[in-house]
Length: 198
Image 1 (cartoon, rainbow, N blue to C red):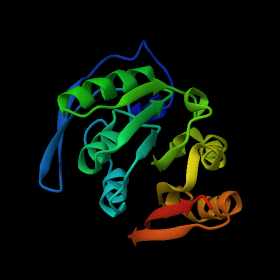
Image 2: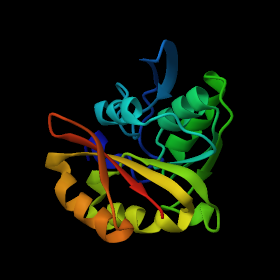
Image 3: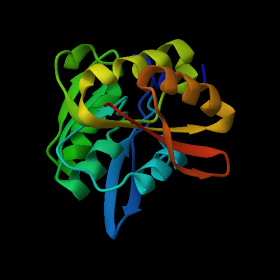
Image 4: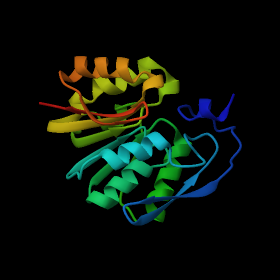
């Protein structure tokens, strides 16, 4: 299996290849410990970076859904002073997210979760998602469908997708789930969508 195929499953037999990467965002340098078996171990994923740059200032609580090694929750939590919960199905990624939160001086709850299983009954002001496209549409659409039940009234889901990864069909699904879906930013086939719970 190639390294990309591991990031959404738990494979404890996978050899460790830890490294530290740096990411500059709004005049601050962030450091993230990454490893084999997690998504985008060599750099902060360009789609993730595009989403971060196009989410407006936030307040309240954030769910970093499919958090990986934690960069979205850590950066938005730090920049906006948010109450952050970060969830992922991959225990290796979660261990890194915990370490990275400490490394960057950010308070963040980190929980093992299959989509929303660990946060049932909890509501958030914002959910941020760079969906695991290689896990398939069924998993992605479960993430979309579960979002309204975990958002406060007026809360938003922000999602980033590439056109070649099904952005158009994803937007149709989001319209079906939320009734509206706004394109916040687009560039070279990359889109950030915002869906608001009314």
